[in-house]
Image (cartoon, rainbow, N blue to C red; front, top):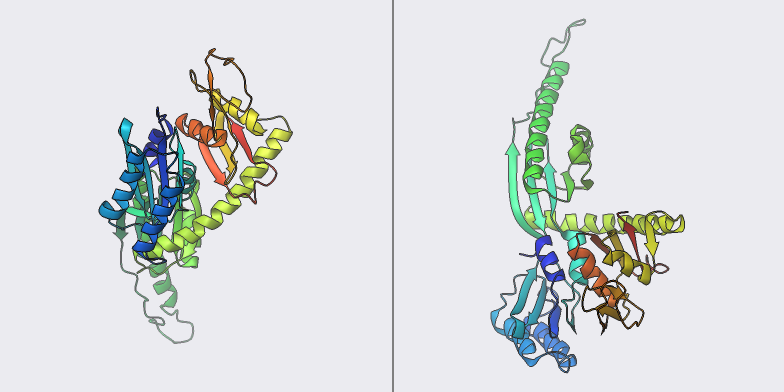
Length: 367
């Protein structure tokens, strides 16, 4: 299964020869398997002069003979001569394409991980809750808790004589007390679920009125990771929950990206902890100062990498100012800084070109 640990592992790879990176949309609800196989052959034909034949054959063989077609997206990295081979079947679709470089092309995976990596959904009603943990759209853990049954107690059970009190208020209080106990127990279970599995974000699902009241009862630690909520029936299955959560995640990401771009640009303009522009970003990445990197989805620029310390630059210089090493030209300095940031523990947000029209690339710095 693909996770953040694997992403860092991929970011740290630098091969002696060309690595083949393949992304293939394999959603069989949209097209047939044969159509996807043909698309792969066409992609591999376009880069056959750059990639080793052994890697092209490994990718072709895997899709035609080994892949089980259980996912919606397939990602392959191959450098057979150096023992490099990764195959990830994802529950989320990918944009098809193939590239060849000394490092795996991970930006599409970075974007998917930012959207769909390790999040939880809590489906809550008046009696209990069901908790789902998703990783890249795949359900990895499901737990639940059930409390005391909530019955609509009969109204008007008391005397109807003038001046006598009816039983409706008492019944209402009993029902409310049961619901409150159930919610408290459900929240305790949810808190333990999140402490155990550590989701990056939490989504709430259920009846709108119920969720409004439950959210007020959440401890601060859970409130901090709640991203939003959506309506769902208590009997909804995992596919329904996943698909509804995808819709909400996409909406939340668009707003988060808008805010992030504004934050970086404003911080850079004020001379605070923000920078914009490729050269400044490359320098900050080498120093390990990048906390959050933002980059436009289709932004690519050639550059140079020091073969000694890995320093990246867009300027052609004879020797590295840090270690004195020689530089090698690389086809994409932007992809290189994405990998470098992931490897050093920073966060990367791959953002739509529309939102990054002016900025292209920038970062929030640790110091």
